[in-house]
Amino acid sequence: MINKTSKFIKVSNAKCDLIFFNKIRSFIKNLDRVFFLIGKKNCTRGDHAHKECTQFFFSLKSNVTIIANNGKKEKKIILKYGQIIKIEPLTWVKIRLDKGQIVGVFCNKKYSKKDYIRNYNIFLKLIKKKSEF
Image (cartoon, rainbow, N blue to C red):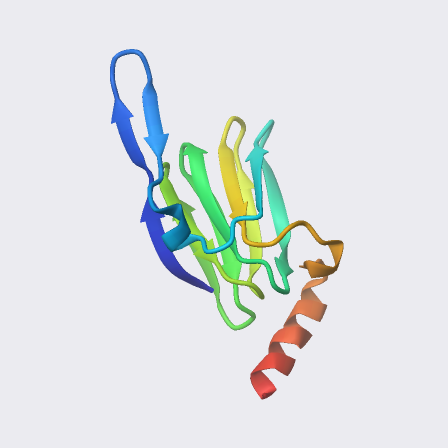
């Protein structure tokens, strides 16, 4: 489900903050897509799983709640500002955003509608089928 975390590096002065992440290739092997979620009001995003895509979530503004579920147990994660976490495929994910929160997501696969599992019962069946082998 989640097996790796890392942190961004922050350099600050009176005028601005510089935030960066070194050695990204050692953490994310194939970076094919980046997107951002920006809370305009309190909302839940995600609420799906991916068949093959690995996602790397990072908070750009304040702490964000992520709920990850591997079909057997659910884990509530408080993604702290500056942290980055890896979410494996076949993990059901919900992201709870408050107004003004920003989450970035690195993906190792390009967008493909076929990669999404949007029905939780189908997700559970896929997990069960996979564990039978």
